[in-house]
Image (cartoon, rainbow, N blue to C red):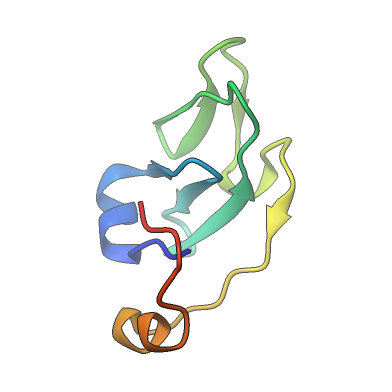
Length: 87
């Protein structure tokens, strides 16, 4: 699974069936979390907002299970992990 940092910076939040990534503009990085059924977050003013409750979270503080992220070139990642989940 990978998220493109440039696309993430433009959209603020990206989702796949299994993961959610949130952009942190203060650090120019993204945080990745395991997505659970029914998770619905939106990105506003540099924060992730739970669409169900309206509660806001800093990008690195979502109440979800974090995933260790590694920055890599997508072509290299795809060569080693061709079955990766893409947003």
